[in-house]
Image (tube, rainbow, N blue to C red; front, side, top):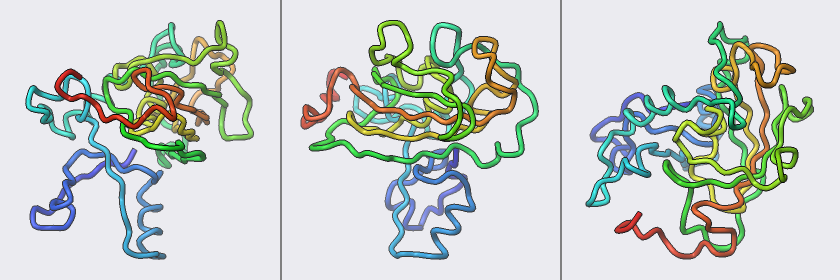
Length: 232
């Protein structure tokens, strides 16, 4: 995950609302950003997301009560998993694999149709269909929503530690109906391996295909009404 390290107080970034700790969407690593800047086209728009904008991080006046940097640190610390969900079990931390430095890559392969008044943020109830593979898109499937129980979409609370860290971070700012592919490095996956999914070698990258079916029970085609911040 790429995050903003500093913002010039008199620069365009600050005027546009960028803050230290916001995460950068659409890019897997610094090299990708540098390549985009070097090759154009211009102007270049960078999408940033504030992990603090959601759930109990919003005060009575609709303002964030924690900084983006605080929220990023908390997400890194607590977005682990347990045996009752697709995050599996607590994996033992080991040295990262050589590909780990490539970071989390997020690729939107289908945009939602119609209005997108509500995008996913921390504290939202998410319902997703997913397929999880070892390595890349050609890897072996180790889990999927279709193979779990009734085969219905899987539900979790975004940013609440209910989901694998890489999937949790990779499903912010989504619209119902949107489909993303996530390439997840070991440090945001199972790192030293998984006791639940024994077929996953230690230090493996993971590849998830995620479709957001509903956010807070709002579906694609019904998403034309903004959040009621007075009651959310």
